[in-house]
Image: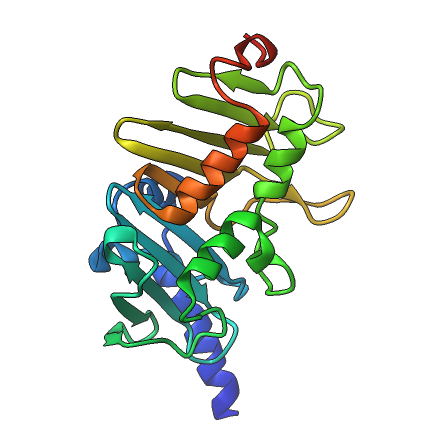
Length: 243
């Protein structure tokens, strides 16, 4: 009986501390992560997990919402100077509001191989079989770039903006992608607006961005963008880009 009451109370607390506006969540993702901002990330009511990578200027961070166990936690892995080295790990327990700095994390999503984790997020491997939203990732982007589409790819001075639409939808973007580079660094952004759980069910993800990189110096971001340039590069492909 006590266990039942504890679960109900925990659920009530979760609902109270969840951010209630999606614009605020977008703001959390596109502005540089700090420990204080990490504590504002959402706790999901249905215990769905999320994993998000951000790389802005010289630093990279990964935020993990791990709600798969009783100890629901939000983890931030910091790679200062974007050199594929973990400099610090923070765990925030929203039910008790405890914050701990650790050398690593017991989250099932954590690995000391941060370069692999970055690639798994970009490629979408981390969203398979881990009770997360079905985030549109690199494979979806590559399929659009390799297609003959002329109305989904838009060239800019430094790179490309790409939209993905479901087959039966012509006016609502399911996902948006951007990649490129400038003198300030590389950019790579994956934003899922919605996805289909099945033919009749449309789901909005908890966090829209799975990847948000701007003026990045991260070697994994650099490698990804340079590989995408081998498929389609601004200037050379402008005529094919829908402009």
